[in-house]
Length: 161
Ligand SMILES: [Zn+2]
Image 1: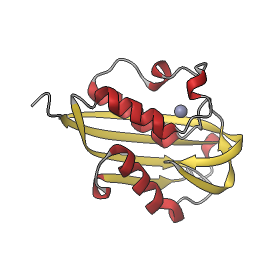
Image 2 (image 1 turned 120 degrees about the horizontal axis):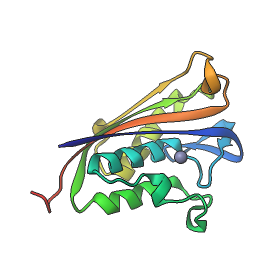
Image 3 (image 1 turned 60 degrees about the horizontal axis):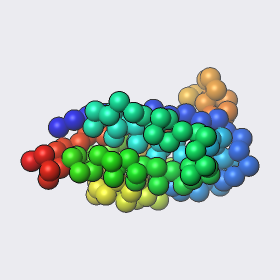
Image 4 (image 1 turned 90 degrees about the vertical axis):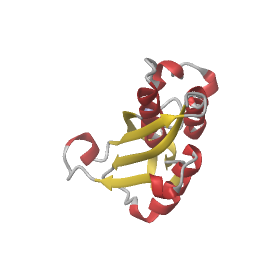
C-alpha cells in the first residue's frame, strides 16, 4: 500500500462561479487559476501522484501556459492523473479537508462527496470530506483564499498483483 498527500490553495476573486469538488457553490467569487481553480481536485491529484511515486506534480504535468487547461473543469485533470497511474495502482480511500472561511460548505457536503467519489471511482464511504475555517486568521481567514489538503491510499492494481 502507498500513501500520498496533496495541498493546494488559490486566491478568490475570479469572475466565475466558485467550484469545489466539481460542485458550484453560490455566494462567492471563483478561484483565480489557469484552470477552474478547484483546489479539491488539485490537492487530490497531487496526493495520487505522490502516492504513486511520481516526481511530477500537477504544476509540471499541466503547466499554466497550456491552452488545453485554460478554464478547464479540474475533474478532467484528476481523471488524467488517474489514467496515468491507473494501470499500476487503484485507490483504497481518500480524505480531504477544505479550509474555507465563507461561504458555508456544509449544505453542499453530500453533493461534493458524491462528485469526488464518482471521479475517483470509489464508494462514498471511502471518501472523507471535512470543512474547517481558519478562525478569521491569515489570508484564508480573511476570505482571500480557499485551500484543500488531501490524503490518498493506493493499493497495487491488477498489473502489479
Ligand atoms: Zn490548483
